[in-house]
Image 1 (cartoon, rainbow, N blue to C red):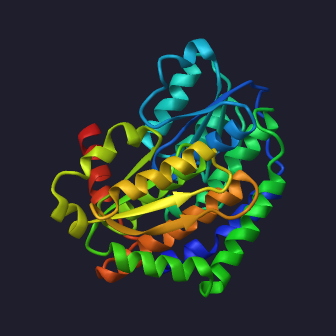
Image 2 (image 1 turned 45 degrees about the vertical axis):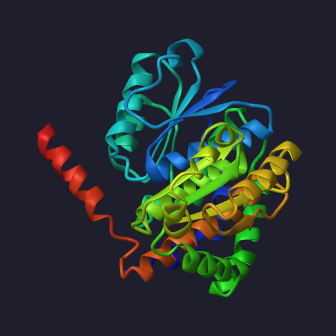
Length: 335
């Protein structure tokens, strides 16, 4: 069985695959909405950051159907489901069809591919991976190339290739800086509740990816919050239960050299205020020039931290027994 570490090591190749794509062309659009869950939905969050840096808008929908505003705004709807059978994603396809919205899909097959064939809308087929959360390069790259083809974002191949080069250097065949840093952070976070902070934009999306990977791969509780919002509420919370916060919480800070100086200053001041009140596990600084390189340089460390936490706890990062049981019970109720 392929290990999660091996799957993480394929990320540079996934990004290069996406850079070389010749995607089908959806209808031209001014904005887009990406619908997807879990390891598929993160592709929409990453696309949103890329679009924002280019002055465009890409929203994300993580639920059944579509948000109420979609019918009026009429975005291009890109539905992402690695398996092609995610029920929330399939309901988004149907909702978009009822509203007469232009659609596109990213999947490996399943019912989503069949609906695309029936409805005559573009579908970009990605290679199948053992777990959707390990296919982030394929899914994100496919979404971005579809958005590019629709005119929502500028050309993406160069940014995808840069991201692949940066991640490959950080991994270096299992001997790179990201691997060493992840082991140090995992040692500091083991048996602690993990909290990940980052400024709005690249670091906040990366922090959310850390949270979900630690949940699903690390089998551990983790949360993420973003600046500047957390400075208006959450920072006050560390004043209570000081022993609990110091001994049972591990806080990681994600930084982006391209972030607004106001954000960097907030992070510096905020860290000084919570120091001594909560366990500070460490910091990770983004590398690269483009948003994709910067983002994936942060997320690959989090992916490795999650695997290390699972290994330390004697857990298999690939297995998702509780999620599988949930889907089985829901399917049984539906039938």
